[in-house]
Image (cartoon, rainbow, N blue to C red; front, side):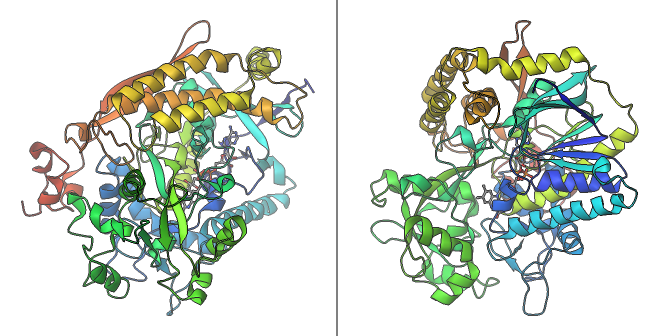
Length: 631
Ligand code: FAD
């Protein structure tokens, strides 16, 4: 068991969700040898859980849609903190990436005239989400897996199927190897046997998804412990805007065993409305000033919008997620919540049972099986759940390159694209657009690089680090994870205050020593305690980066709400908070936070907005450089 398995490839992809698989396809199409590693079973990633759809301005349902409108919606959703170049590329390239999936064998739902159907979602001006019922992610992953297999079959003719494209699942990467400011491979263990694996590669793509497991109430599954974020930090890359965490407004709240599981936004997109315990449709009370022009202020207009969107404003249930989550939080706090601390989501009184079952089959089964609620006859109980992190690895927009040579990042693990708040549906399109780019540029980098060599000493050091919990006599990893989740949920959650964030940092600092001394018992085969012990240090650095940035940013914007600093400050809109890791000689790590200017949008892109709108977010010097738009 102590023997290390040695492998090598041109492009190593860590993560087999949509971003990782799309990157792998592209790198292989560019002729490179590729290894894909996945912590969970192949095919099981957050991407497979995505329900609502992938946002792409194809204009199939409303011909007025185009990339400029999508770009505008994305910037508005992110409160103009987005990396504008990423948002631009995303809006421009998403339709091609969706079409391309159909050439790989995907089959999206259709409009009556046979085009790819598109559904409404929060913050999107037109119906824009390409979908397959409420199982879009499954189709996306299925298609990309199938594409990978077909690429392997092409290679098999030359007798080298697995040599050129290999998928290794149930394997966790714990370290990246670097030298001279460049990445040169990775180290990890096979979960089933505990056996170590070292892979040399001149180009590495991180596509490990999010950090949701640092919170107790979350839609995320067990493997989302911020590994890629932490691996990047330790390798010398930077994380931007880690304070922005999306709490999805609608997670299940009852029974306790399913608390946090996602209730798709499609329920609202397809007509569902939110009500408090007094039966009031309360979202009309929460339309913020910046969105008043686009959202209906009365139920009649809101309901007409579903059939006549051109002449009516949208229902406020479809405001961006940060707004809806805060509204639910306020209703519950004001004592107008349900018995179990949520609000009601009602589609039963709005659509007939057959339509509900047809459009939302997974939701129907989820509630029937997990909560014994028939959503065609009664309302659901829902409340906010930690869902997505907007912050992540700082990358170059065009190439997805991080600050470390040869290290690329795509999908949820990267930062910038979504600014302070992601619009629903923009993640699936993000991972297709930037997954492809990551594969392309990683392949190009590999072509221009020598094959790196890993030394025995660095492999031995990584193995020693991975085995450390077995020699420790500290605490149980599950108890420590509970303690960290409790700190984050209580003090760094949906509503934040300076004093509480300071308290969070003090409590996290106290956990640091305990985590360094976390202990694992038993053998190395299928040992979840050991696995979690190794994940904890990743969750820890991500949690510290989030709490530090949340304390520093004394304004409220998107997925970061400071009760003691309400409202957006145009000066803060110009600032990205960037975290890096200082490592002392004894191996102790400290997160460092710096302010960095947000790149200024080009005049052409500024010109897509009315100056009156820009003035709500920007200083006059910034928006006056726009070329058009009445002031
Ligand atoms: P993931 O799909 O999260 O994949 C990450 C991969 O990395 C996995 O294979 C994992 O095993 C692997 N990994 C992690 N750590 C390691 C490690 N240390 N070593 C090796 N491998 C590792 N977005 C939308 O746009 N539309 C939707 O309708 C939608 N619905 C959603 C519903 C749910 C329930 C959830 C949880 C999310 C939803 N999202 C949706 C968000 C979206 O699904 C995710 O943000 C997106 O799928 C992330 O894709 P990814 O490729 O970046 O990572």
